[in-house]
Image (cartoon, rainbow, N blue to C red; front, top):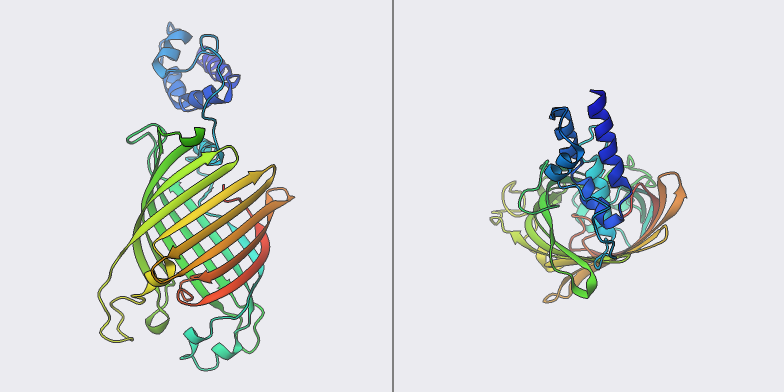
Length: 339
C-alpha cells in the first residue's frame, strides 16, 4: 500500500509543474491515475501507468507557447470540473446575488388591477435576489473531450420589502429549470476558442389564472472567448401551446405574444479586467422592435463577496413584466461573477 501511495504522489506531482496548456490535459487524467494505482500489480512501473493514462511527460514535450490560450469560459469550466462531484460543493450556474435596492421608473401595476387594494400600494423601490445552481449528469466525456450534460435551476424573486399597507409580499417569483449540453469546437477564429450549447428550458412564475405567465423553449448557442473577453449568442425557438378558451381557463397559453416582447435570441458579452467584471446582455425582436438591454458590473468587497451594480431597460425584466417596458437600477452583493 505504501508503494501505491508513493507512486500516486509521484505521478500527480509530476503534472503540477507542467505549463498551463499541458497541466490541463494531465488534470483530466488524474481519475485514471488513481484507478490504476489502486488496482495495479507491485511490479507495474510509473512509465506503464503514464502510457495507460496518457499523462503528458514534461521532459519529452517541446515547450511551445499555446496558440489558442484559455479564456474566461474555459477557465471557469476547468475549475468547476475539479469539484463537480464533491457532495459538499454546490456549483453556480448564473449569478447568485442579492439586490437590497432595485429601483424602477414605474412599477407595473396594471398586471395586478384585478386584486383589490394591491396595485395601489406597490412602490417603485423593491429588493431582488437570484439563486442559480447546476449539476453535471455525466462522469465521463459523452461525444467529445470536455463535453458535459447539465441540469440547472434558477430562481428569481422580487420582494416589495419597502411597501406599506400590504404585507411586504414577494411581488413576483420566477422558476427556470433547464437541461443543456455544452461542448468545445475545434474552430479558432481570431486565435480564440469556440464552443456550442444546446438546451431546453421552462420558465414560469408559478401563479394561476390572470397572473400566470410561462413558456417553454429550446435553444442553440455559440460561445467565443479570447483573452479576457467572452461572448455568447443564443437563438431560441418557442414551443407553442394551445389557445385558452377564456382568460380564466387553467389550460392553454398564458402569454401567446411573449415572443413579440422577449425576442428570438440573446447576445451576452463579458470582459474581465483584473478583479473586475463588466457584462452586457441584450434581447431583440426586430419585427416588433421590442427587446431589452442589461448592464452589469462586479467588483471585490471582502472574502468571497463581491459588489454588484446593474442597470436594465426594456421588456421582460420578469415574467409578469414580459410586455411591460421599464428602466431599473440595482445595487447589492454577488457570490459569483458571470464567469
